[in-house]
Image (cartoon, rainbow, N blue to C red; front, side, top):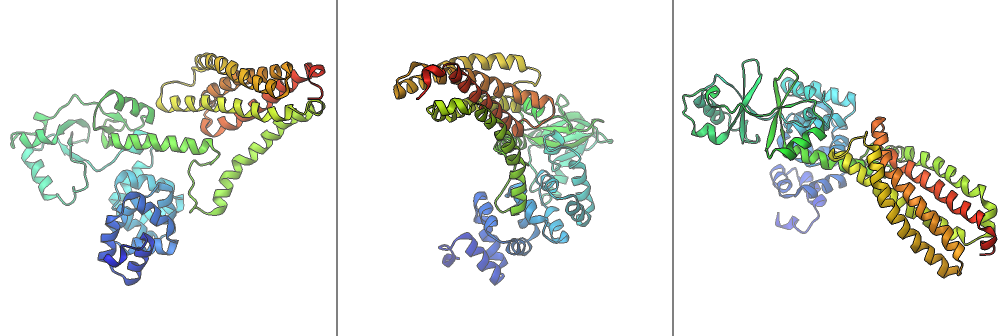
Length: 456
C-alpha cells in the first residue's frame, strides 16, 4: 500500500482492480473522503465504474453510491445489470435509495425493483409515491418501532439480538404504536434503559409528541423544525399510521439541494442538474431549450434599437451607454429576483403578496435608481461635456432601475401562483423587459433632445 500512496486515486483503484485485490481495494476506498469518491467515480469510465461496484461487497458498494450526487449515481446504476444493481440498492439507506430510484427511467427502476428483495422493493414503492419535497419523500424507514403492549425487557432483548441489523439505525428514540400500527408516542433510549424491565411501553411512553403527515410540504416541515428543536419527527399517513421518521439532517439537505437546483435553473440549466459526465446530447438539449427561447426574446428587445436607428446614427455616443443601462438594470432586477426566490423557499412570503412586495422593491429601486442615474449621468457629462446626454442616460437608468426591481420582485410570485417554475422563467422575462424598456427610454429621451445631442 505504501507504494501506491504517491499515485492518484484513479491509478490506485485501477491497479487494485486489475490485481483483483478486494481486501486492499475495500480498505483504500474506506480511506477516501466523500469529495474524493465523487471525483474518483467521475474520472472512471462506465466499465471501470461497474467493475469497482461489483468487486466491492454489495454493502460497501451501497455506501460508496450513497456518497455520490443522485444524478451521478443514477447514471451509473441505470447501465448496470439489474441483478447487480438490486444487490447494491437493497443495502442503501431508505431515503438515499428512494432518491436514486426516482432519478432512474421508469423501465430501469422497474427492472431493478423486480430483482430486489420483496420487502425492500415494497418499501421503495411506498416512498416513491410521495413527491421528493414532502415529508414522505424525505423520511427514512430505518427506525425502532414497537407495540405498546411489549415490555421494556423484551425491547432491550430485541435490540441486543438484532444488533447487527440495527447497526446503521439512528439510535435516539423508539416509536410506540398500537397493534394497528397507529402512532402513540415516543421514548428516548435512555428512558427505556432506565425503566423497570417489567413495565409495558404503554406505561412509560411520551404521548405528547407531534407527528407530521406524509404529504406535508418541505416549507411546512422547515417551519416545524425552526419552531421545535427536535432531532426528528414521526411521519404518519392519513390514517395516523406510522410510516417513517423525518430527521433534521434530511430537511437541511433538501433545502440546500432545492437552493442549488433553483440556482442552476435560473442560469438556464433545464432540469436543474447537470454533470459533464452526462451524455453530450442530453446536456445540449437541456441548455438549448432555454437558450433558443432567449434568442427570440433578445431579437424582440433588439427590435427597439432598429426602430430608433436614425437617432443612433445621429448620436453615436448612445451606443456606448445602451449596454450599460441594460446591464445595470438587469443586475438590479436580478437582486430582486434572488430575494423573492429566497423568501419563497423559506416560506417568508406567499404568492398572493405581490402588492406588498412591489411597494417594498419600489422604495429600494427609487433610491438606487437615483444614485445610479446620477453616477452614469456625471460620467456621460464628463466624457462629452453635454448636460443633455447626462440627463438622457441618467434618467433612463433611474427609471429602468425602478421598473427592473418591480419586475424582479413580483414576477417570481406571479409565476409561482400560476404553477410555473419561477427559477426557470423569471430570468428571461426580466432580461427581455428591462432591455426593451431600457432601450426605449434611452432612445425616446434622446429623440426628444436630438437637437442638443446631434453629432455626439
